[in-house]
Amino acid sequence: AQVEGLMRSRALRGVSVDPGGYEVRIVENGEGNTVVEFTEYIIASATLVGQALLTLGTPAQQSDLLPALIAGEQVVAPAYLESEDDRRSVMPETTAQAEGSGFVLSGGKRFVESFEIAATLLVTAREASGRAGLFLVPRDSAGLRQREWLLQSLDRVADLELAGVPVAREAALPGAWEAWLEVLDGAKIALAAYATGAAQAALDLALAYSKIRVQFDRP
Image (cartoon, rainbow, N blue to C red; front, side):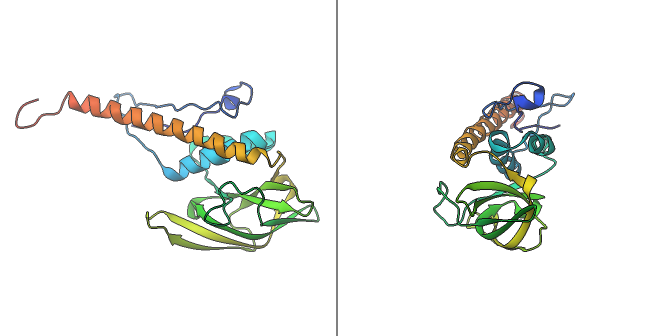
């Protein structure tokens, strides 16, 4: 039994790219059984990073990462917070210095979720020209150090230090930085879709069980 609570982009179904074109799809097995699988790290990766790729990414970046994100086969951890209260910060302090055929990232990020299982990070950084952007950074990159710790909620997060982390030029998402704030808002809508789908699945399970439940030898 399986629930597929992952975003399905219309772009991946052969229709034009629509950053808001997500749906929650529940898949049941042949016996009609349904199990709700509402995994937080997949949600964060698929909603926020998926929105960023659709809004700011190149076609190559979208085709390389979106199918794996949607299938839950790969996690890309968003790394954009630099303090406790900068969720909508206008400009990151982390820098991206052009060097050779790529960039070198320097700075720090806080409260990065899913670092321990992510293959790639989506890092916000500011270029020397003042332009800010997003960069896809492999988790095992040289110069990337982390300190993992637990929040009071028992969620595991990581603080990152980027000490001259090299990234290829094609790892940069070319979209306008101003669209990043729209990405954050769009991710909230996708997360609401997740919650709606999970709530409906939970209700369906409860209703089905209420019809067969027996207590004190009585239905």
